[in-house]
Image 1 (tube, rainbow, N blue to C red):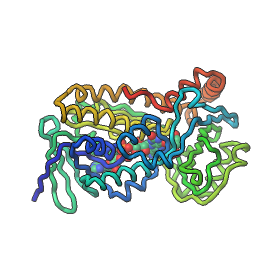
Image 2: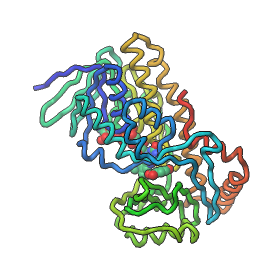
Image 3: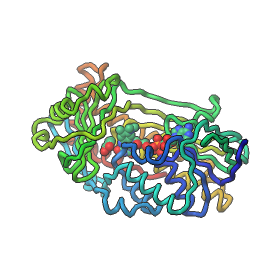
Image 4: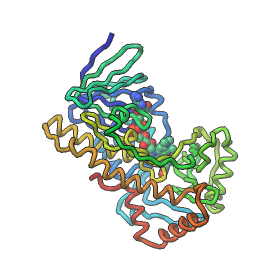
Length: 394
Ligand code: RFL
Ligand code: PHB
């Protein structure tokens, strides 16, 4: 037996992209149904991004989910680049007039879920076998299994917000879809610990033993990352080994201020750059990680997802409420113009800050020369700062 339901927009994926889209549509009185293959606790517990561009903060406030972010988010007016012990501060505020805000993805997801549930948002969790169909017609549908029942959602539009490993992108015919990818030959080991951060600003460090990043979630909770071999497992990284390596990579001066404590989350993530073009096929629109992945070195993945959803919500609202096709037609090109610039920045930061097994002494000298150039050129620092705080939407 198949149960049929109707909605205006079926949103596949309940990460930040899908949740924010459903909120922006709801704010305009447009109904949606959101599906996810995981449950709410699992989604809220995924420890990922930490840095929000000023435009992302504004978008969340405008969407009506910014109250806790404004109270608990930590404004950062700069960050440090470090190279074999030498430090250079990128003065975000001085160079661009803007700041970024440290506020965990877990908190954003929680704020969005709370508001969606308060307002009676419709969700299906733990769905299986999701199949979007008839995407090139005026009446697409999304079929899936939920608690043993087959459900068919008939809708006007489908939003593919199901992340890199989702199904939406694969629903675009192979002769229409182009993909571009670079997989980096290392991973990031991430550790969360209930200790005050080593520095009140982020430190991105290139060291001959590999990259290290000192970040945070609050005044009392630190988030640290180390570049590891792509094949390393979490079991190979005891807390003791982790702290020792972090101290070496950030140098004795910073290490002197480091407070160590037990880790309560430890994971290794691969690094990848990926873009799928176009981001629209008929009435299917891809947004967020479903369409593109950046290595986390520029802190851009979540911010890109928020930007896509701002552009997509405007396109859908114009079409649904005013019959205006203009922004639907330009959705993919508008997003991709920005996506490629953000891909470039994330790739560039990754190339500058990591050790690459295939690099010769020449490439290492190039990294050092670039660091020295950034440290002595306001123009070079400003180029980094304006990308880090976020490029304009379109
Ligand atoms: P998500 O968050 O992956 O959500 C996709 C949702 O879709 C569901 N799903 C399905 N649902 C139904 N059917 C299917 N077949 C499905 N397949 C998947 C999944 O269960 C999930 O709930 O994608 P979204 O919404 O596009 O959001 C993207 C962000 O999560 C991601 O870009 C960031 O976390 C990236 N990122 C960072 N971004 C930043 O902007 N700043 C940062 O500081 C930052 N740091 C990071 C990061 C990502 C990291 N990892 C682990 C990848 C640090 C790390 C370590
Ligand atoms: C984080 O706090 O998780 C974080 C911060 C900056 C990055 C990546 C991750 O570039």
